[in-house]
Length: 260
Image: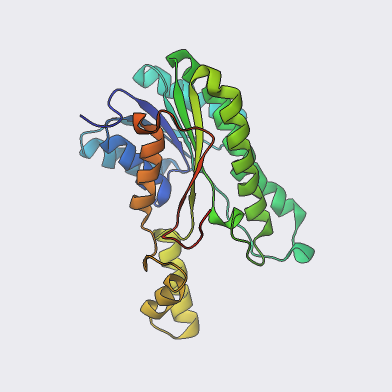
């Protein structure tokens, strides 16, 4: 028996990294998963991985910036699997790492469109289906950037901070429907993006990758860059009945780099 047997989930931002790890973790615990991302080829790859492991999944090409696309993926999940219980908002757009005085505000708008408004679009599309099930769970993927202020991350950090505030507002509004809304807050995530960063730093600076990793983990008390698979377990927790009495909360999963 899995923690999510009989449940149906929609996961946005499914690519080669954290979104994929989250979808695989939910499927492992018994959830049928509707995979949402812009890249149809990647969706097919993750769907095949889930099915090869004995799970159920569909892939729906989705741009969360488009409200109608968000409605479509939720409706596809209901049509394929009979309902909807869990939504994971993990689609994101990274920052350009510019100081505020140098930043292009048009770029900031695009960051907010995905990281904040995209999550709102998908959540709003899902709410009627979650309500029809009598309960549900929305899990927003925020970022330590919203907690630990660092230079040249204002656009991305602000979008994730807005998402954290909206998490609490939605939790209060949707509590009468037994729809819980929580956030997972990662810091560094050991997956394709950070692996590429480590490789780039290594090549550009002429140092070993192990040295780059050591620089990162110097500020992580547990001494390890948290693997994406471990962070995905926090999503499983919020999606499952183990967190039945938890809503409006954010869980830092960062190896101890920041204590929220």
